[in-house]
Length: 123
Image (cartoon, rainbow, N blue to C red; front, top):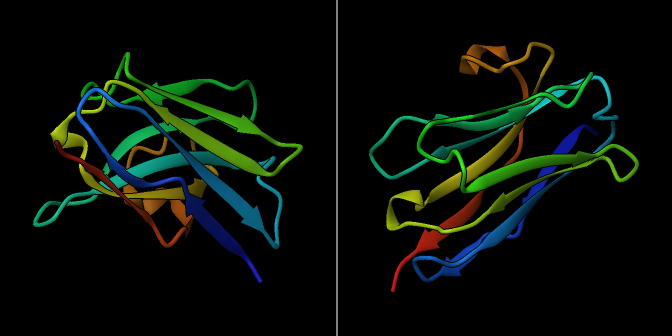
């Protein structure tokens, strides 16, 4: 069974950090670009960051550039999103996703979605 499982979300104060993980089972992530997306209440799902399958190229949305870092560990079949200097506007459900196209410019490129993990930034 193909699955992507996110973990690492939670409640954090502004300025704090979290590391999200996206673990794949039932298939290997090696040949996929992996993206992180987020969706806040009442808003559309948006791309946050993605990483290529080949040379590790990365992309970041302007809103997170310099604060978030995406990485992958193919040996562990896992992708990470390190989130630093978190802001209240980062509050959302975060999803990981796979695609064969990099960067993952639209949701229509996505092959598989995880179930999401909640990130809440609040004092």
